[in-house]
Image: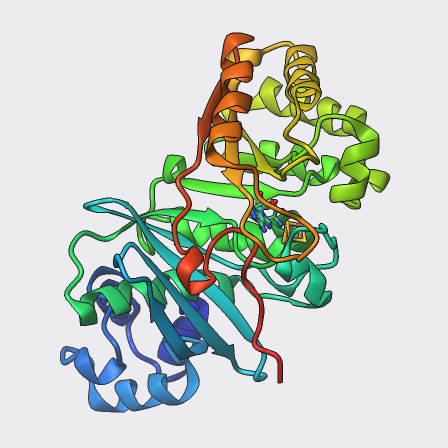
Length: 343
Ligand code: SAH
Ligand code: SF4
C-alpha cells in the first residue's frame, strides 16, 4: 500500500484530502481486502483506486502452516513475477512476529544460507517490504487468528543494509502511527555486518533494534562462513558497533548459528567472549544462539546438549546469551531456509 499513490488518485479526481484519511483508516486500521469494502468512499473513487493504486503489490502463491500452527510461510509473487518468501511466527500465544524479506536473493553468499546460494536477483521496494506485513494482517483476519502483528523482524531473504533507501522508507512507514503503527522497539533489522550501513542506521533509527549476524568472532573462520567478512573484517565491524552504541541506547543482538565442529568449540566461545569484551559495553550485547537449520549437506547442526554447553561458557564469562527457539523448520521457513521457487 503506497499511500502516496492513493493521494495522487484523490488529488487528480479533485476530491478533498479527508478521503485519503478514510482510505488510510480502512487499509491500515481494518486491513480491508479491497477498496469495494470501503463503503464511505464514492464509487468513482473506489473504481479508480482499484485501477491505479492496488492495496497490495504482491499476490500469494502459496501459504504453508506448520503442524503446531506457530509458523506460517507465504510465497508472494511480485508484479514482475519474481517471488519472495515471508514468515509469520507466534513466539507466544498472543504475540505474532512477521519476518520480512528485503531482496530477492542475496549477494553475500553465507555458506549456511539457502538465500545466499540463490545469488542476488533484485532489491525490493519499500512498498514490497511493508506489504508483506499487510499481507499477514489480512491473512490473520481471514483465518480468525487473534492478536495483531506486534513485531516485525527484517530477517527474511536479502541483506537489509544493502538496500538501504527502500528499507529506511519501509521502516518509517511501519512505525508511522498513521500507517502500520508498529512500535519502533518492536522492530528489528538484522545485518550481515556492513559497517557504513550500521552507522547510518544508528543515526536514522536509534529506536529500532539492530541484530548482527556474527557466527564467528575470529577473522579466518568468519571469512569462511560469512564471505562479507573479507570486505568488512571484525575490527571494522567492532568500530561500527562502538559508534552505534554511542548513538543508540538499544541492546544489540549478536546472532550465532551453531555448526557442529565448526564454530561451536570452547575456543570459539572464548573468542566470542573476547570480541564482546573488547567492545567495552558487554551489558549492551545479547548473544542469540541459533541451532543451524540444515540447508547445506556438508554442515551439521550442533546438538542441543552441546549448544547448552556453549551457552553456559558464555554465561559463565558474564555474557548474556539465549538459545533461540526455532520455529518453522518443518515448513522450511526457519532462519536461512527461505528461497524463491526455482522456475
Ligand atoms: N541478511 C541478513 C538478514 C537475513 S538472515 C543477515 O544475514 O543478518 C537472518 C538470520 O538467519 C541471520 O542471522 C543469518 O545468519 C541466519 N541464518 C542464515 N542461514 C541460517 C541457517 N541455515 N540456520 C540458522 N540461521 C541461519
Ligand atoms: Fe544474505 Fe543474510 Fe543469507 Fe548471508 S545470511 S547470504 S547476508 S541473507
